[in-house]
Image (tube, rainbow, N blue to C red; front, side, top):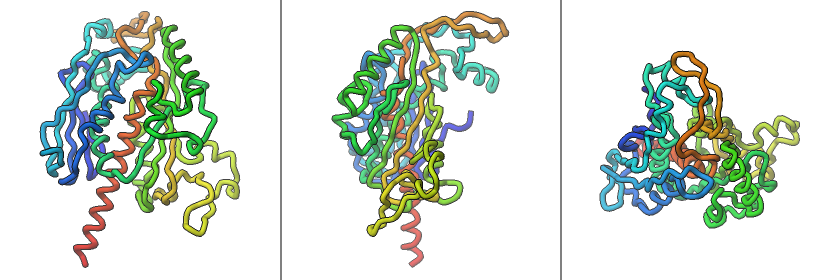
Length: 362
C-alpha cells in the first residue's frame, strides 16, 4: 500500500490499524535543538481522543504517546522521531458480523477490490483512528512554527451555523474548549449539542463544517505553480477521513461577485482593505489572515438497519454495532490544526533551506 507519507522535507510516515496492537509513525526532517513541550503534545492528543464527552464515541482510550527515538532531554536530536500509541480498549468482536459484508459508504468494498484483503475490525487502516499519528506529528510541527497561530472551531452542525465572522468571535483556547462541540459561540453551541444528541438517540449521524484561521503568517509562504499554498492545504484537509469539501477565502460565494466587488484593494501599509483572497494570492501568502472551511459528511456507521451486499453479491440487512461518533466534528478540530501545521512546517523547512543556500553562495 502506497500513500502513507505526507510532506517533502518535514515528512511523516504513519502505520497501524484501528484494532491492531498500536498505531505510530516516523517524523523525518525535523531540525535538531527544538525544545518540545511534551504536555502540549499530550494535550492535542486528549482533544482528539475518544470518550471525552457524551456526543462522541465512548471507546475509552488513554491515547498516550510513547516516543522511541529522535528526542533527548525534551529536545529534538535531528534524527528520525519514532513514536507509538498503543490500542488498549479495542473490542474486535463488535465487528465479526462485517467479515464478509460491505458497509454502505465505507471503504470496505474499495479496499477489498483493490487489495484482495481487508481488516474488517473497525475499518483497519481506513479507520479515522489513524489520524492519531497526524496529531502527534502536528503537535511537534506546531512547536516548530510556534510564531504562527492556527485556530479551528466548529462553525456549523447540519443546518445550525454561527452567523458571525471569525473576527467577531472570541477564539481563545478557553472559549473554544468551553463546550463539548468546540464552538466559540455559546448560544449556537447549545443548539448544536442538542441537535447531535437528538440525532444520536435516533441511531443516526450528522455532519457539519470546521473553520480554520492562520494568523501571524509571513508573506511569501507557498510556491506559484504546482505547490500553491492553498493547494497543499486543500490536499491535507481532503486526506482527513469524512472530509467532503474545502474552500478558502471567499470560496464558492465569491462566484456571485463581480471583479470590482471581489478585488482586495491595497492600503499604505501593504495590507488590504478586504481579504476575500483568504490571505493567499497566486498560491503565496500575502501576510493577511488565511482562513478556510472544511466540510465533514455524516459518519457512515449508523445504528439503523440498511440494505447492503456481502462479498458474494447477496443483499442483506446490516445494522451498526459498537461505539461510534454521532458527529465527528469536535474530535476533528485537532486533526485539522495538525494537518495545517504539517503543511506550514514543510514550507518552513523550504524557507530555511533557501536562506541557508543563499548564505553559502555569498
